[in-house]
Image (tube, rainbow, N blue to C red; front, side, top):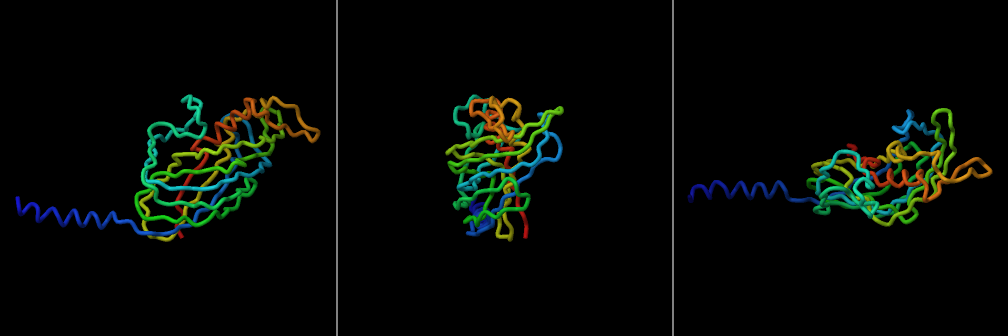
Length: 233
């Protein structure tokens, strides 16, 4: 028994050294994508512009166990920005707290800031929109029908939980990229169901009670609309 303890103890100490955390920083930037092909709904997008206002991104150790697209309404959850299942954020590992207004019309990468963080096993992140939320404008076409749309302002103060980000974070140089996929975000929008008449310039602004705005809300709260990836230097 004494010999067994002599053998095991150094292993425990060694494992403790492996899991020790080291302070580090890394950059965070944002990219926006718009598909050139038709969405799942059959609508094709063009001339998409607009903006989204973020206040923070936080990184956690908790793993995201649900890989399929999440539709909040299918779970009848009253909090629109909640994450499904039994997701637990776990240990906080990093954060960027500076505000950012993302230009959805740009296709160039837009820098956000520098994360104060530690090394460790990352599993997820939390994205928080500012109260000004997001607004999108553009042209949608389907079966010969064209709609020049303005979504109106979508706001929420609750964070979007459980963005998937699996990485064993060490001290290697690099940064994280948040990609906002407008193809997913707008995939549930039926642009001809805005419940509003076109303005004098031909643009239709979504009524907040309309099926079109409801589809926007569901897309904006879908974690699949936001992808996180590591970019090595």
